[in-house]
Length: 296
Ligand SMILES: [Zn+2]
Image (cartoon, rainbow, N blue to C red; front, side):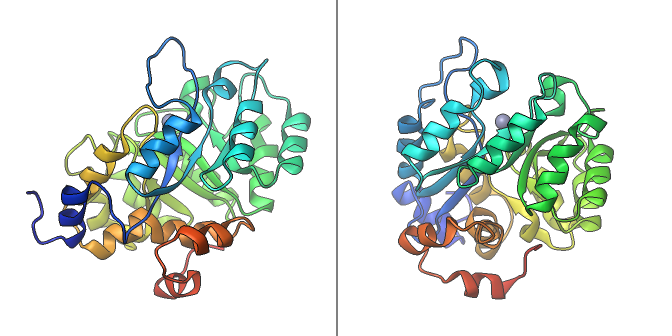
C-alpha cells in the first residue's frame, strides 16, 4: 500500500471511502457534453459517485450553460432545486454571449442556487480581465463569492498574470483556480503567497506527479490554500482522492484539502450550516475555523 503511515490512506484503501473525512468537490460539471459518453453525467449518477466516496457536495457548472445559450443554466437550477443537499452551482459567464442584466437578475433571483460564477477564459478565448466582464467580478466582489476560474499556466486568457490582476482588483472574491496554472506549477505558490483569496484547485493537477507537493512546499499557508476537485463526471472521485492520499503530506493537510478549507469558505453561505450539521464530520464550524482563518 502507498503511504502505510497515513490512517486516512489505510481507511480509504480498505473501505473505499473515508467515513471520518468528508469531501467537498469544488469543480464539477453535469449533463451532456458534445457526443461524449460520460456514465455519471446525470445528477443521480453524480450523487451515486459522491455517496461511494463520502463526497458531501459538488459545486458544478452544467455543460449546457457553457455550450448552448438557448438552454442556458436552467438545468443547473433544476438540479440544485431537486438535490439541494448535494449541489450548488457556479453560474457560467458565457463570455461570447453575454447578457449582463439577465445573468445578474438570475443570480439575485436564485441566490440559494448559485454560489458564484464560473469563468473559462480558454474555452471562450476571452481574457477574464476583459472590460465587459467587470460587472460579474463586481457582483462577486460585492457578495464575497467563491468563483471557479479555469486557470492554465501558459494561457493568455486565464494565466497567472490575468488571475493576479483580478485578485488585486477584487479582494473579496475567492478564486478557486481550477487546474492550478497547469504546466507553470511554480507560479501557483507565488500567486498564493501574494493573495490569501487564491486557492489552488486540484482538477488535472493530480495527473502530474509532484505538482501538489511543490505547491505545499512553496506556499506559505501550504494545504490551507488548496481545494479538492476532480471535474466530475469527466474524471473519477476515487482517482482524485487516491492521488491526494498518495502524495507526500500529513493527514491534517489532507483534511484541510478535502473539507476543512471548504467549511471555512462555505460558511459564508446561509444554506451551508444546516447541511454541515446534518452530514459533516462532527466537528463544529467554529472549531474548524479556529484552527485557521479563511478570507472574509
Ligand atoms: Zn472543468
